[in-house]
Length: 253
Image (cartoon, rainbow, N blue to C red; front, side):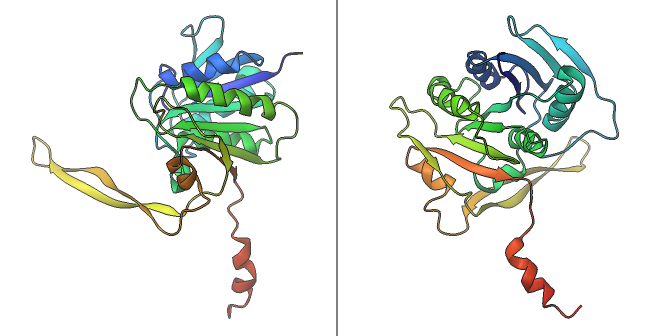
């Protein structure tokens, strides 16, 4: 029996990234797609609870069963598993995102939250991102390297309750130097807000800021990307700070 691969993203069903990922996925098995009907970047692990969800069949991909969802990437995963497939797929693939999701960006990423949701269901899941925001970004090299990862992921030795956060450097025509399994960098956004006035004189805000490396980045995803390597960060949903448990037990509570 051919493996069942589930594909989603946060850039929306019409993005070039998801089309590129589907082209790769269909080489390995049967593919079902559930993706947002509009861009959902920066949604993190949000789910829709105060509005209705709509799910509509799409004919955008030839010979591929596909659906658009009015909700978030995590909504797409939940609906795909429990309403469309009625079972768990062999592999969840999210992306390919336009823009990298390294370091703390993973917390805001809809692409990676879809993969994390898969890990919570104990389904092998991979989030793919390319460090290129251009709508017509070149995904050819990403496709080539993604095949290697998908092939390994389907061999049955995927870590339990873990997903992979895979980031590719912007393709410069030369090619990537290889894979690097590494840690998430401790970097962060130094947020600022651009305050403006609308035509009625009422204020509104644009979130801006600068991404700052908080400490040494050697051996991290940022380091890998800066050296032309594809970064692979094993990512888990258990956010417990185990090192702090004993320290907190010593508090006078």
